[in-house]
Image (cartoon, rainbow, N blue to C red; front, side, top):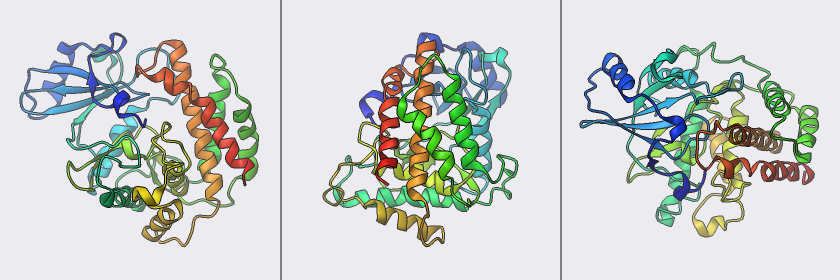
Length: 352
């Protein structure tokens, strides 16, 4: 999440995430058209929630995502939803990897998993796009903006996702869900800013909300860009996708303007003009134009809500570290950022 040295690339499969290569080979031969072994397996360093693996063969590479082993919170690690939404979006040409199959037979690898194509391209670990020339960076930002706006314009009913979530009441349900997960995880502990947010958010809910297919974790490092062009080839990590409020989804993405570089690859504190990047106001306006809006009412509320939600996710990561079920070797560092994010969120409230 914002550190290429820490999260980019692959590593040998962690001991607690080892999988039966022979069982996987047999499943691939039976379920993936055109698959030919032999097969080698390594693990991506990134991925805080679901262990993710690169599957190499002589002719092509694949990616496998699975639920982690151990005791899981109810509703978490829904890899079956990831597979379903990507298969649906592929029908309308939205940039997602091709999904080859979902396995819900735990006897194969010990937990549910799915296999998709590995899309070759560039991943940027922060939204400053500092690895490309200054004059190109705004185009990369523009590509992200356009890709998210395109998602929110997808007719989710036409692609078979009318039952992918409950239309309406999304924000309240999300606040309730993450509050419940936070409070239920007594092992991880409480934090004053988080407790204040739990009181403040329900009292300041927007009067109305629209409904669209939402990603839930739309940020630079969850996209694969063309190797040399400012073009998104694939959007990854759909675990938190649902039918929800597109403005909340956009606000999560726009949090990058208010987060420091070491959290979510944020760009807060940067001289945006010097870096060749748009400011928050211009970025919001570009999204509004693409989605035929004049403005985003309650943008500050939506950003606070998303900071709260992200803090709750970090709280869950910290809990998985304590339980020994974390999917990522650097999960401890991420979990330890929980309190900082909660404090940043509450500072947004006090500055209103």
